[in-house]
Image (cartoon, rainbow over all chains, first blue to last red; front, side):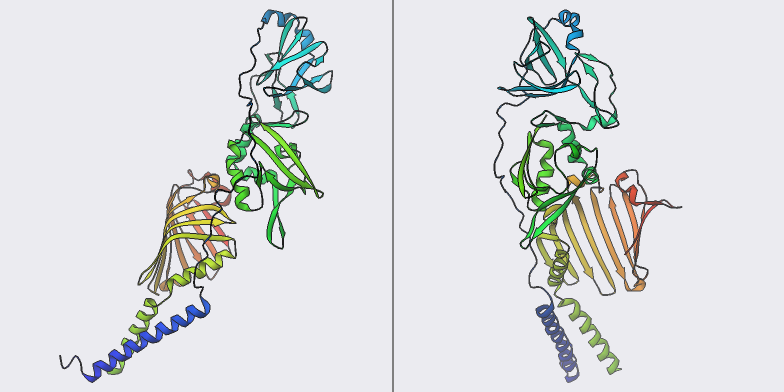
Length: 283
Length: 171
């Protein structure tokens, strides 16, 4: 015991503790002078609500009006109705609008409008009903994108010309219905699951001001891609999507993550200092 | 003999003090600050400092404000002669599932003074096990991937060699 507390051992202990103390002070100085005192915790934007919500009161999923059809009668007058090619359908509870091609010209018909003596009576999800002389005619919509990017018909008046669809058709279409565009849901789902496909087809660049990120500008759109049919142009600044202000990466990504589940799509863009609203129907 | 003993005790005290009093949490904050410069933010539920290292639990990683990655645990440990970082259970956001393989069970990065110019890396996940090293002198990374069948999304970045597929990049 006496040996343990000898002068030599106590000196060694004091040296040992002094070195530890010195290092403690040294680290303290380093921490105070050069190291941050706290971390950079990020508070995630949660529950950020859209500026407004679109409520679809009359979804297109509503069953189409039932029309009694006489297949034999349709067959007899097929030559007449064959001239009408159905390009697009917009169907709501109070409005039915279809886009047709008749003698090479594109026309937009509302319920009750006539073309070549055929009156538009109504439309379902993928067909329109016309009447002429108390007879009903069903024209089936079937648009298909061919490999050159042009739209062509594969079915007319309920008859299929081709049963096999090319692979490109699987990702979906954007159909011009005159006053608005119809975006097929499968297209949105495809892009929602393939971020790299989005990057290949459209370029988005930051728009910054003094306060930081202000929005996103479209830097390029690949020619012939579905994005080129949306009506947006290079240089457009995306302000809102479905009422959600797009002023941060988080907001943009939140919209992207939900894009496969939306029923309607609307976009406010800024083009040459003017704001424009683009509306799409998701079908 | 007494002098040698004193020198050894002093070195031991220096070594002990250096590791014991190292402000490990603050070094982690410094790492967070550096990552912030690249728009990468880390949120963690718990930081636990120990004698030889640091344990960080339930980490959420944000890139440009987007929550992209969740990590169960990151462990740093060092004895000054050997340093190790182990990352467990990395979950990448589902939107990146087609760009990055997941789940990633673990990633480890080791450095030893015995081969001071090399940093060993390894990972376990859906792709099996991968091993590689970072050459600090030549400033390049080389990673060998044994099984590429489950990670077709990585193939554009991989090169086929004699032993199999590998990833190589200079920095």
